[in-house]
Image (cartoon, rainbow, N blue to C red; front, side, top):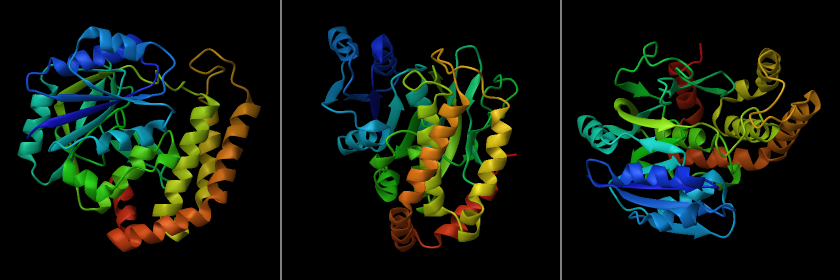
Length: 322
């Protein structure tokens, strides 16, 4: 098996070159592609001057994460395909371990890497869900000594680095570019599951990640996209009775989450209640406005995969957020 790795870059600075270098230095050959999402910094100039072997695709406009992923997928033809952020560093044996895991699990359409900080703090092992499709990364924030890092079946890959077979990507179809940012990989992995493909978590395929380099943690912008796209996905996938309960689930979760929101976002800007409430209101308003379109998508998924609501109910029960 051979591997294509596609990196989505947006103002990645020297982190992009570091990421590419870690892939070029793998113990097995890896083909590297970079999609630049209309960056305004000199990250691509630095990469070009590095002399590293990489294919660069430059977009004259920001396609969002999903749109950039689709562009990269269109340029890939290897058996194993990978989509990832630019703020990653891959352990030298990552690709070798990934291929070995795919070989051990021919039934798996996807293999999830162990994504962690160099300090030993885990970013994600798997993904877990609340009844309203609120998603949380399993073991996020735990020291690796406290996390369950056995090789096991999980819902899907953490969005920072997604590795899958070509046929699984083709069965799931393209990501929804209208999502722009956040939840696009989660919705895509629901389709991956609906198409009958499993994901195996591989603790030996290690990747180091500096989180939220492109998007600011706790920002209203991040809240808006994540909530809007979660709701859009819920309209497409959840049983009708659960869709009716979405406002109740949301109020309970928002009240609980409000206690843990800091006074400022990750870039040091003050967080006001008005900006947070405005982002949530905008997310709900746009999602409801798009309801007819989402119901049409739901009908299309039903024809393509069959039994969507019952299958999604089983998936969420399997990976229920405790």
